[in-house]
Image (tube, rainbow, N blue to C red):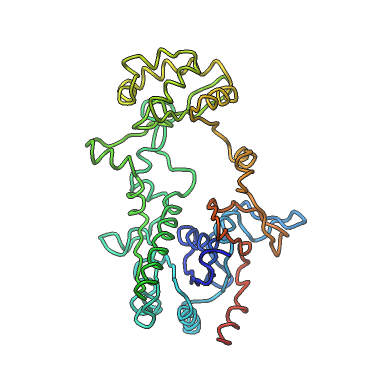
Length: 392
């Protein structure tokens, strides 16, 4: 049913960026052959606790981390350091449309599995290489990990409480966003390369670096520096270009206020019982509100403390002022909107009976996302795939 049904992907990647990309391709219907080291498997299989429990409540060998990024794949245990293992990979390459790998630059060349070698025999192959720093440049040969890329790529300089306040200092984001975004860029690049091949018959190599990815998705913050000439700084929950757009204390917690234009600000002031604030020359436009940010926030904070988060949400929603609660992860998975969108699902699992999953957010009208199966046990599909190769 998926839009990529019939596309075959040979996945030599592990940990997160590559597997995240191939999980998305699996959701879209592609066949994913996940190559894993015999007996050891993907590193993330061992990154726990927590581990999935069997029906008796006993830990299995399946970590939550591994289960988050490998559904819909076939696990094939192959030792690519051996000649026999390399021969298997080459047979799979001959039947694949796409190869995804995240070895160090040149790491697959000694096995004859590099792009130059494989593309000479299979010119239509799309070969996606994900590394820390890309295939070129002075640091191309270095290993790259998400946290160090968040730091080096500028993200940690704009994440965290602003200097001078309690808890100030650089912070990394709570999930490996550089890896995840690299996986997302990889998917879009692979789909673009598939489109090019459909027209020309030509495959190509995709060179994707984590650091490049992090720099690219600095987005408005990167442009704030390039245009304004000043390096952005940490501002806690506040937005550098829009005011008021931050968490504000309420009578029982916090509310994330996201006022995006002057109309919404006027409506917010009306709800707060202070419509005159929207006519104050210091606050009448967003440009002015950014300039007088601190004065405005000092005026808003005592007003928001007068009601609970739930009360403010209802009042603001009635006037179409964007805002929301700051949910913990358990609250996220109880959120009625999240539940109604089917963002939590269960898939059958051979050891645990079933395994929970976070759904793909994409909703196709004609080719729905296809959940082909739970993240596989190590080597679960080795015999099936190798027998299929012999029959081909």
